[in-house]
Amino acid sequence: DRAEPVNISQRSEAAQKLKIGIYFATWWALNVVFNIYNKKVLNAFPYPWLTSTLSLATGSLMMLISWATRIAEAPKTDLEFWKALAPVAVAHTIGHVAATVSMSKVAVSFTHIIKSGEPAFSVLVSRFLLGETFPVPVYLSLLPIIGGCALAAVTELNFNMTGFMGAMISNLAFVFRNIFSKRGMKGKAVGGMNYYACLSMLSLVILTPFAVAVEGPQMWAAGWQKALSQIGPNFVWWVAAQSVFYHLYNQVSYMSLDEISPLTFSIGNTMKRISVIVSSIIIFHTPVQPVNALGAAIAIFGTFLYSQAKQ
Ligand code: 3PG
Image (cartoon, rainbow, N blue to C red; front, side, top):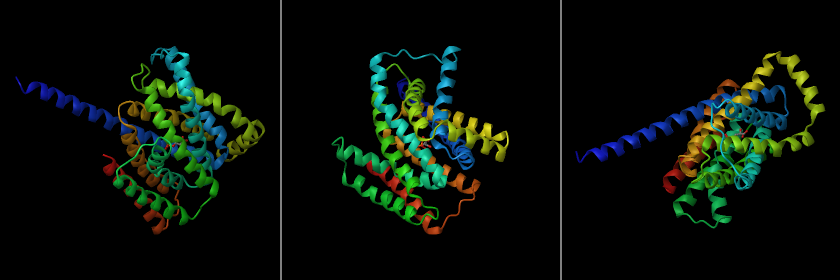
């Protein structure tokens, strides 16, 4: 009899681990599909500000329909909630558009190698802007992350400054997004799925005027015609796939973030990048030099050391 409470708690711990495992596997799989369609679209239609906007618009629409049809229960929000969400949405918008601009200029694998440096940004932001200090091994683990990313960048065959800076800006913006999101969800009635839905909607409002100003309907119309004539009607399906999968992978990632720490989240995110890097190199026949691959491997190994040091 006495052993029962232990068994129950062990069982619920195992169930929780299984649940997080399923979330992670789904998140990674959805993300690989997103990255492939996103790049196919950008290759034919190089307007990342519009494709970023369409991803957010599609997600917002999917969630509004889910709420209206009661597939998902709409969250009860007040002005305070939206005010607190505003800085998260600014960070999400910047991180999203910067990553998409990056992928329109360089190989998907290169963007993700640079984005595997996100934990280093997390430590630097926490240290210099939030005044948090870490044990020495944590700082030491940044050396392979930064060194590996640097080696991969300087040996990248198709290096492009906009592509590089886009991925760096995305890293910085997403560190803020994750820290503020976790704070915003803590103890609140709005769970991960609805939190991300509201985030999409607010980001869409922020991004739309900028997308019109930077690219605009004239460029989009001409580009769309060109892509349609090159690819055929399938092009529309590619756009739909990149938009739907963008929403789905982010939704699942927020359902995970709701249950885990930002640290576990960023490690899961780096592991996700390994599957994206490998699959995109295979699918897009990206040329890789051994020294370039070594840089990526060192950076990812650095993230593993970082996770050990931080725990
Ligand atoms: C985006 O467009 O938001 C990026 O492709 C996503 O980057 P992530 O892999 O960090 O979610």
